[in-house]
Every structure is written in C-alpha cells, then in structure tokens.
Figure 1 (tube, rainbow, N blue to C red):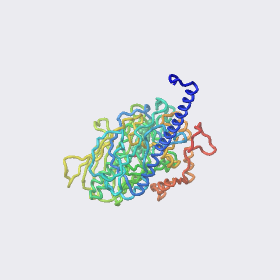
Figure 2: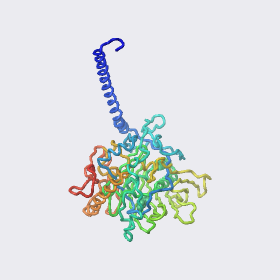
Figure 3: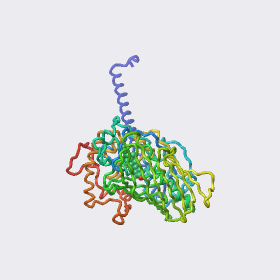
Figure 4: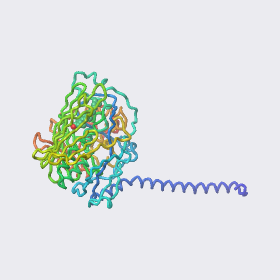
Length: 557
Ligand SMILES: CC(C)CCC[C@@H](C)[C@H]1CC[C@H]2[C@@H]3CC=C4C[C@@H](O)CC[C@]4(C)[C@H]3CC[C@]12C
C-alpha cells in the first residue's frame, strides 16, 4: 500500500477494517465449533434414548459373543498372602469419581440398556458349537449387535455395537511393592482371615462383581435352552455343565483379593450384548453372604455366594455353602453347589488357586450330571482336569465330558453305553487374555465390570459397587487415597453386625423361611427406570455426625 502511494492514515484504517472483519469471522467460527462439539457430546445420550425406545418397542439383543479371553498363567501380585474372609467387594465412588472416570477411558460408552428385553426369547442362538479362536480384546464387542426381536437376525438386525472399555485406567501413582509377610507377621497366631490388609492386595473388583464373572459364558445357557426346546436334553445338560465349569476359568492367575462389599451394597450388570441382566446384593455380613439373580434369554439363574474358610498356614481352603439354581422357561430346573477352592502359597511362592471336589448338577427331568474336579497331586502332570458323566433318570450313562477348568471342555455323547462318535465335540473354550493386562490379571470381561460412564452413574442407586470410593481409587492407581477410604469404610462396616442384630433387612432379597435361601424380591430394574431409590442408603458416605478418618471433601454421593 505504501508502494501504491497511500497515506499512513488510510493504511491504518484498512488494517483496522481487516482486523475487525477477521475477529468477527473468528468469533463466528469459534461459536460454530462449540455448537458442533456440544452436538457430538450429546450424541451418546441421544442415541441411547433412541435405542432404549427401540428396545421398548421390541428390539432385543443377540448375544452370540465368542470373544476369547484367557488369563496369563503367571500372576504377579508381589505379595502372597493370605486371604482375609473369603470373598468380598466393595466399591466406591464419590464426587471425585466422575472426573476420574471421564478422564480414564476416552472411548467407553455403553449405548444401550436392556430394559425390558427379557420377556420372550424368540431368538435362537446359533446351535453350532463354535470354536472361536478370535483373539482378544481390541474391539471385543464389535460382533455383538442389537437384533430385531422378530428373530430375523442376519438381514434385519439393527447393528448396534456396544462399546465397553478394553483396559483399566493408567495408574496415577507408581505401584508400591508391599510384601504380604510384612503385613501378617504382626498377626501371627491370630485368625489370619480376619486381618485387614491394605489395598495393595485387592483387585479393583468387588465380590459382588466377581459373582457376575461366573456369567461370562452365559451363552452356554442360551444354547442349553435351545437344545432343550429341540428335545435334546443331553446336550442341554452338557451345556449347563460346561457353564458351571466355565465360571472357574477367570480365577486362574488372579493373585489379589476382591473388595468385601458393605452390608446392603449392590451390583447391577445390564449386558444386552450377552442377553443378560444381573443383580446382586450383600445380604449378610456375619456370615458373609451375597445373593444374586440373573435373567437371560429363556432362563433365570440365582443363588447365594457364601464360603466357609479354613486357614492352614500356607493355604486356605474355601468350602462354598449354598445352592445355585438354574430354571429354564420351559420348567426344567438344575441345581448344584460349587466345589472346594484351595488358595496355595499364601506366604511363600506364587499364589494360585485350585478347585477340586465333586459337583452334582441335579436336573428335575431326564438328565443330571456329575462332575469331578480332580484333586491336585505332586505327581500330577495334567492339573486342573475336570471329568463328568451325564446320566439319565435311571442312572444310565448317556454322555461324558472332559477338559480343564482353565482351558476348555469337550463332550462325547454315547448311545446305549457305546460311543456314538469317535470325535469329541468342543463345548466351551476360555477366551483369550486381554492385550492390556495388568497386575490384577483381569479377563477382558472383568475389565468392563467396574466401568462407570457419566451416563450410567446417573442411573445407579447409591449402593452400587461402582460407587465405592476406595475401589475406584485403586482402579485409578491412587493408592493412598484408596487406603484411607478403605479404612474409613471398614470402620463404618464394623457397625454392620449391630445393624444386622437390630433387624436390618436386605433391600432386594428375602428368605421364604427363616434359614431358607435368599430370593430376589423383584423391583430393582423398575425402580431404576424411575430412579426411585427409596430405602437405599448412602452406604459409602460419611456417617452422620461421625468423622472417622481423613476423607477427601468430595466423598459422599
Ligand atoms: C492375601 C491375598 C492377596 C490373597 C488373595 C486371595 C484370592 C486369590 C482369593 C480371595 C477370595 C477368593 C474367592 C472367594 C470365593 C470364591 C467362590 C468359589 O466358589 C470360587 C473361588 C472364589 C472366586 C475365590 C477365588 C480366590 C479368591 C479371589
């Protein structure tokens, strides 16, 4: 402009005009950008509303998920130790959690709720026994789709990938090596199952969530249902047996203790991609009992988890008490109890679990199954073996089953006591381990169980394990915070016995008779629809008028 001979004044004016034009333009762009961002931000919720409506209008879910996980054999919680009590959970959350969760996994949204997708189960799962080798975690749920309820699957399904997280959050703090021995040496001679351990010996999973791990291979029950409908009662029984064994697979290589839930703590798992909805509550503290109830396509499964433990120094023996029940919609019922678990090398060596004993799966119709989990011995070259026979009502052997609880199971159906086929059929195979495995050695399925998205957080009752602060801090690798919260909650928990003695009653389960089993009384999912959590106390918050230990200001839901 100088060259053109324009005066300084004019040039300045021009500059000003250009500058102001640009800044207007910039403001507009910024505004647009914000609009877009907020639009994309709200997309998951919008999608959820749409999909929930679809579900209510009769869209159900296909669950043939055959991802493969498995657990690395070498586990690595530095300590070997000793388990206190034999199960438990706790979970946490507090105001800090939202933040933590949001920052944890960018891409972990659950897009759909099962709501009422449990009534009719028109969809018949693929009856072929799939031998899936597909490896692990990366997009583990990509082949799960929400399916048209009319039962037309391939062509007419509404493809809705369900994305759950594939790894735990990166730990905020560096892990500390704490030897279990240093923790228990001062307690020699005491009942070690009652020694309170710091959070380093815990895994970020509560015992309630651990109960749900038994449902990882629930597709076996869908298959069992379909076989039964087609009149194949032997295959139904074999699939039920495979399911009962598959629950043990995730215990391999898991060196840490689940959190012991607080009295009244609950855990829900809405897994439309697997066609199941699970709910559990800690119903008693002394003895420690958790009750659970799960609904799938064509079946219901319920039971109690309660173990009697015996401490032997280097080992702990856990004898499960209580019966598990599986009821198919056509009236066939199977009942069984779990076998003994021994936790070895508590003090020296690599800690590992072994499951042994006999499991009788009794059916109320034609067939029952007897499974033997082999006792381990020093000479055993092939440990972890399971063998079984299916018998008809007259006691005749109609099928056999063999395999390993940490790998796979095969069956042979026999006719008149003679093998009908030389080849065995694969019934179940453990999933591949996740690529992002941590010192807890969680399976890909277990990694998803404590995930808390902002969207889910809004829906949960204040008692859900995902809201337990110490468990959440542990998951985030904030060990000091986790420890102080654990102490606070343990202090609070000491009142549980008193509460129980004073007539405390579980919110969602009840007994028919005074010492009968706990049964789900219903209404949880309905209450969730309306976010009507009457009678659900803030069990993870501060006790009124009690300041127990240093607690971050944000605690309390
Ligand atoms: C001191 C610490 C580090 C020891 C860790 C102990 C771990 C391995 C223990 C503590 C509680 C245990 C669980 C308690 C109850 C059951 C139910 C049972 O039917 C199957 C085994 C299972 C699921 C146990 C597996 C092993 C277990 C998780």
